[in-house]
Each structure stands twice: as structure tokens, then as C-alpha cells.
Image (cartoon, rainbow, N blue to C red):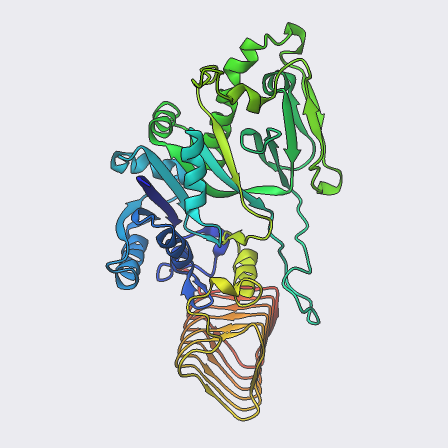
Length: 454
């Protein structure tokens, strides 16, 4: 499709401390014992998008990610690894590698996106509309720990303190307004309402951080707006606003209304899908974009900002927090197990003791061993772990080379690689950083345990 693909893989995210480390950067965090970056690369490969630039924050992290990609996708993808400084943001990362961008259109996708939505669908939508930018929107994911008696993965919705406001044209093809991280009411300028004619407001959708850009537009914005750091918070809203400026002038918004606003609220932070803000005196925004009777394109707009809305049944979650890490690991061994490749529950050579049970929605890595009378429920055990007898692991993720002593109880926790839990340790809703030793008989609840940085 002549798209150049940029995967923004990140590096050592502070939101994921102590899960990430110099030895395990964010792109290599395991989801069902497979690096999270694998899920994006696999989806791109399936869409025949194989010319990639993978952008990693930090030289050391880039070396680790590059080595993993070389060993996993050899002869399958053409990948260039680009190291950029840390904490420069998504727009800053693109600005740093902009000299490598040569194709007409650029597909940008976050390396922490776990999704079954084909990137090719977004690319096709972008080309069909000849858009300046096309963004993928998806339903806000369900989040939160499961209750012990729960049988499904979508029983507890995340209580959102903040939400997104997204304005679409009635045909749901064009992005007319976007505001992120709104805590209370949002206000929309009447100038914008006059410009767009009709706008449907949504708070049940999120920006999935997958974009198709026209390269010339993207590079111009990055050059002119050199303080922009975020695609989501800076570049995309800027493009959406600028597409409306000329239309506001054409519609000649009354002077008294130029700076007035219309209040939009969402009671209890629920979706207000049906709300329509309309100005009957102007045509719909979609109508403005339609072709002229002679088949020529309308020239009243400088560019188009389009959307591709994923099906509500699609799976689409970003691994950008510890809770999201838990959610995704739970989901891909449960309702979203079609994302697993290969889709096997138990690795090729784990050893299980007598009367040890492994429940559904679990995954055991190769070379791991468990003693007698252990229970594993809705959990993932990494490779080459040594687990004693009478151990209970529930709703947890245990990474590689972990040693767990007899009688330990682990619930709702993440145990990073090379951790040692001595006998009778009890952990609930904890994160244990790589290489940490938890002494015998210790009990922790909602704690983050990690070695002190030297």
C-alpha cells in the first residue's frame, strides 16, 4: 500500500515501575509470555505492512529490542531500529526521525497496542478519503481486577475520573473535535458549531494511538510547531482545529458569538451518544466534503481529518499502566485468546507435582516446575520458574526464572524475573521488581517492592 510504518515502542515508562528496568524495557514486557511489541508487529505483518521503523527511547533499550526483533522476525519484516532520547514525547520522537520518512503516507502505531483490528483497515480508510490524518477510535476498554467468583473478563468496568470528548460528523467519517482527559464539563466554541453544522458528541470512544498521516502535512506541523511533544494532545487537536478555521470564516459567524461557548456535559461520565449539536442554517460537514456535480473535489477545505471506528466487538487496549498490564494478560488468556500465537495453554515441558491443578485461562512457560498440591487460577507463569509445594497463584503474572518457596500465596500481583519468594510469603495486589528477595513469612498488600537504584 506504499505506507511507511513507524512503531513508537517507548522505553522505560515511569507508569510501569517496577515492571520495567534497564534489562527489560517496556517493548519487551511479557503478555502471556510474549513481548507486547510482538502483537503489533504480528498485526502489521498480517496486513502486509512490512517496511517498519521501530523507535525506541534510549540506546540500551534499542539494542535489546533490536536483538529480539532480529531473532524473531528474521526474513519476515524489514525493520530499522531508531534510538531517540527519553522523554521527548511521541511528536518529538517523530521529529527526531523525520529525515527517514520518505513515503507519501505514514502509519504511526504505538508499540504497546494489543489489538485484533487490522492496521490495513485504517490505511485503506486514509487512502479512500485522501485525508491529512486518519485516527483509529475504539471503545473504552473494561478494566479492573476480577472478583474471585467471577467467570468473565468484562464484569467490572473501570471508574473513569476523566474522559475524552470526541466530535464526529453525522456520517461518522470525519473528526471535528477532540478533547482528552476531561474532568468535568467541556465547552465548545460556537464558532466551531457554525463551521461544522452538525456534530455528534461521544465520550465512549478513545484514541487508540494508531494514525495514518499524509507525510507532507505531518512534517510541516512538526517543523512549524517545534514545541509540540504529543501526537494525541498536540498534533491531532491542532490538525482538527485548523481544518475548521476556513469554514468558520466562510460561514461568517456573527461577531457576538465568535468567542461564546456551548456547554457539553456527560452525566455520570456515561456516553452521550445521541446528543446532536446542530446549526440548521449550514450544511453538514460531510456534505461540504462531497464532490461537486461535475465530479471535481470541493476546494473549501485545506485538509481532512478522518476516523476509522473499530467494531465494538474488537479488542483494543494499550499497555500503558500496571492495571492495563494485568488486564491484557488476563484477557489474552481468556476472551481474547485468539491473539495468542501459538494458542497453547501449557508450554512444551513444564513439570507438575501430584495433586497440582492448573485452571482455565492460564499459561505456563517452558521449563517451569511446580511442586505438589499447588493451585494456579487465571494466572501466567513464565519460563524456567521453580515453584514449591502448597503454593497458590491467583489472578497474577509471574515472569521468568522466579523461585517461589513452599506455602506461598500470591493474589493479583506481578512478580518480575529472577525474584525469590522464600517460604510462606503472602502477597496481595503487589508488584515485585526484578531480582528482589522477599524474606520468609512476609505479608504484603498493595505494595511495590523493588531494589534500590544505585
